[in-house]
Image (cartoon, rainbow over all chains, first blue to last red; front, side, top):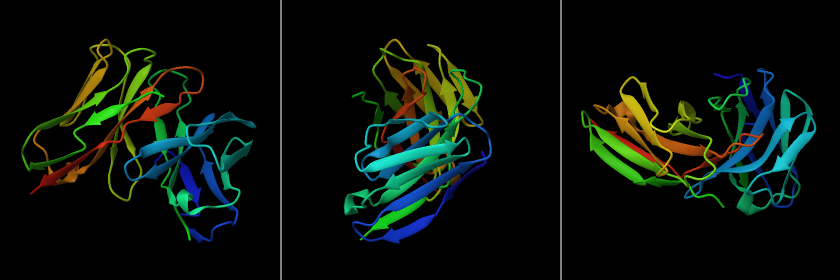
Length: 115
Length: 113
């Protein structure tokens, strides 16, 4: 395992409430990513980070914000959760060498249900 | 929007069969092609990263080839076993400084004993 944890692992919340998911790595990797996985859509990038306080949007960023105040932590926040955000969320980190053959390593996932 | 297509969507084979599936991608702006294996209720596990046209990678009974000029990669599994049952994902890296991946929707392989 690449030293990535996600918390919580499961969460049920109500529409309109804020939710924060945490990704923690022990690898000191620069690049971190948040994806969501939905049937029929595969993995889609929400936001990513290329360093402390450096973040950018992915393809499905509406309704989500992120923060990275430390190398090891990347937080994903749903400001006001909606039922369409019910999904499994995966965090990933990318290997440090900077070469084209670095791969992304995934955390265990967080299953979020918005009622 | 960059389209990464995988075919077939799903595949059922018998134990011992060899099988293969395809990942197609736009051949422009190619940097690297990643293959992942994803078992149900787990997280995706990296299999290969391929960068050069004509690349061939192998890991046990699984191998992959890459054609960047025509924009496709094949994944082969020789002598499929029930434990090979999983979704196989490919992902395109277009390069740039942030190493974002665009994933295909995957091929779900079921190997019947």
